[in-house]
Length: 359
Image (tube, rainbow, N blue to C red; front, side, top):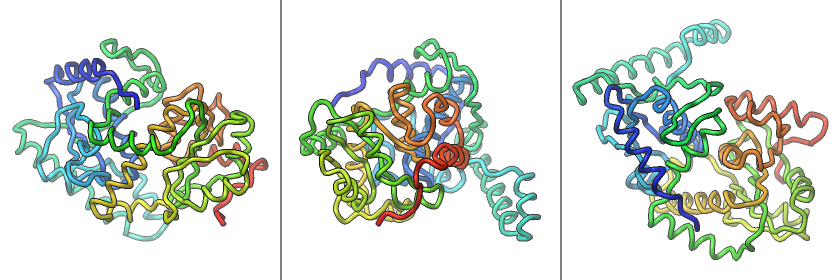
C-alpha cells in the first residue's frame, strides 16, 4: 500500500504553526457520516490557509473513532486540543434567523425556533469557555465560512488555482494512515487478491435514501461495461444484497468487496452507537476499501454520496460521475447535498430508473 510523502505534511505543519495571530479550533466527528465530517475538515483547512489562521483540531469524541479520535486511524497533521467543553459547545453553524423564522411561519411550529435559541446559547457558552481556556479569543467550528468559488493561492504548498486544484493537496496532508491502521488495511487488501489493473465503484444503500434517491446497480454495470470492459471490479457498498445483485446481473465480471454478508445498509446513528471493537473493525474495512478505490482505474461514483464525491475530487478529471455530465462536475461538487441530489435527478431523468428498491 502506497504511503503519502512526508515533506508536504511537514511543510503544512510549519506553515500552519507560523500563523500565530489567529487560531481556529475545529471539532471533527460531531454527528455526520465520515466523509461529511472529513470534507468539512478539508474546508476548514482551506479557510485557515486562505486567511492565515492557525488550525487546531478537537477530535477526542469523534464519532468515527473508538479510543483516540483522529489518531485511531490517521497521523496527526496539526496541533490538537483536549478541553472537554468542545464536545458540547464547539458545533457547526446553524441556519440563519431569517431562514428559521421563515420556516416557523410556514410550519406554524416553534420547534425550530427553540432549536435555534438552544444552538445560540451553546455557541455563546463555547466562546466564553474558549476565552477562559486559552486567555484569548479563538475561532471555533461555526466560524468557517468558505467560498468554494474563490481562487486559492498558497505557494508554500503548491496551491494556485480553484477548489479542485487545492482539494487533493489538502487531502494528501490529512489522509495519512498511521502505522497500525495502514498495516491492518494492507492485510485486508492483500486478502482480496486484486489484479494490478481493476475498476471500482460505490453502490450506496442504508440511510442515504433519506437524502436522495439511490442509483440501481444496473446503472453501474452499464457504465463499467462501457468504460472498463473486461476488468475486475471492486465495489464499496454498505449492503451485501447489492453486491449479490451485481454478481447475479453481471456474472461475467469478477467482483470484489470488503462488505460482509450480514451488512444490510449503513445507518450513521447506529454506527455512532456501536461498540469500540465493532466500530474499529468496520472503519478499517471502510478505509481499506477507500484505499483500494483510490487506485482504481477508472472509479465510478455518484455525486450524492460522500466517499464517491471524495474519490471523484481526487481523481478529477479521470473519475467518472455516475449521475452528472463530467464537464459539470467542477460546479456540482461544490454544492450541498440537496443541490447535488437535484442536479443528479435532473441528469438521470428519463434515462435511468432511479429508485429505492434494492430487492
